[in-house]
Length: 253
Image 1 (cartoon, rainbow, N blue to C red):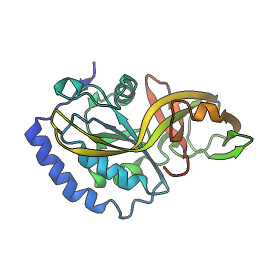
Image 2 (image 1 turned 90 degrees about the vertical axis):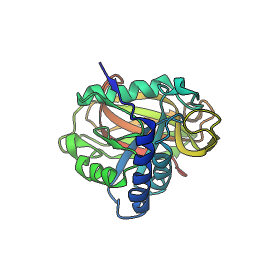
Image 3 (image 1 turned 180 degrees about the horizontal axis):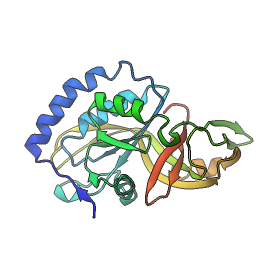
Image 4 (image 1 turned 90 degrees about the horizontal axis):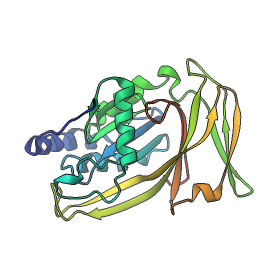
């Protein structure tokens, strides 16, 4: 069983103010470690906007790959998230199962597929980025992309370090940025901006630890009117995702 944590609204607001003061203020400082940050967020969660703002700042860094994955389990409290998907909720729960800690909450970041933290806490994110890099092969496999004849060519390197020898290449289709005016619920009256909003995810190919080239047609990249893409080479399964071994993003994300 997975526990979905709901912090009482007054405490969430206090926590959000503290995080905004201590976290976002440092968002332009010395996070230079390559990192994949997945933010599980919700338009119905009053403590999420500071995390959404922080992710927007972090996403501008060239070595940061940032994804917003809106979850649907707060839709019942007065506002249905316009971007939420049960698939993102399932991914968040899958991470908790893989970690065996049952921690599912918003705003939650998962860093490099391994460890989690509060999405508005910059110091925690920075520590997780440093602490998980290379663990289990995280971000140790090369992934280079190029366009050729209308296709995206993905050159995957061979197994490196202590990386597992099995993983899958996942394509995440994203919208670059949207502002949402929230009409009801805890964020009533607020206009919140979201970046790198995942609209769908699809397994593209399997990888067995050997160098491999994968071609992705433009029609596959652009499916669903996406505005960009993120590629993750990830161990584990869809039900229990593991270390992110390599990552890449399209220009402008």
